[in-house]
Length: 53
Image 1 (cartoon, helix red, strand yellow):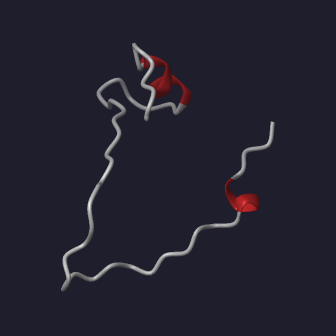
Image 2 (cartoon, helix red, strand yellow):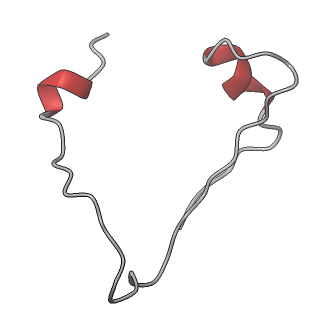
Image 3 (cartoon, rainbow, N blue to C red):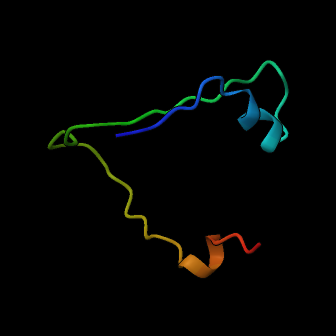
């Protein structure tokens, strides 16, 4: 489940994006085809992505 506040204008201000850009969520579902190439990516450690207040 996702929650999208309405209106979403605050997100552009927080991220300092231009007025012409709008936030959206792309949520892929399903499984890759048998013959596709899927990148082998590892998650970054939390210490590299955590925002400290």
